[in-house]
Image (cartoon, rainbow, N blue to C red; front, side, top):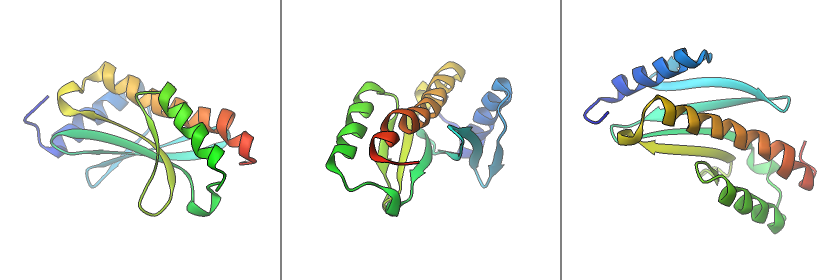
Length: 136
């Protein structure tokens, strides 16, 4: 899939969402899809460059992130078990979950697996990590 411009890549990914029957919208070369996971709405943003496709969803605002070092240990353990996705913190201190793949590796099946793994990581955060630290 090399040699494509960003608009074309977004078109391919939109086609993947259509095949999967997932709801989404495209705004300025950005795919936005909203999922309810563990009773919470989660916005997943998908962006593309000519070399990479990335996706991310915010989990916690900076003020909600526990200061307990064990919280970050739990995230690192979970990160180790789910190698396709990572828990991360952006420059503003928002905790999120993200994944990326090079354009050369992008096909329907690889996208489906990475996207569903990202959703699984959100679910695992709320079911297995958040309760240990009183996060609701």
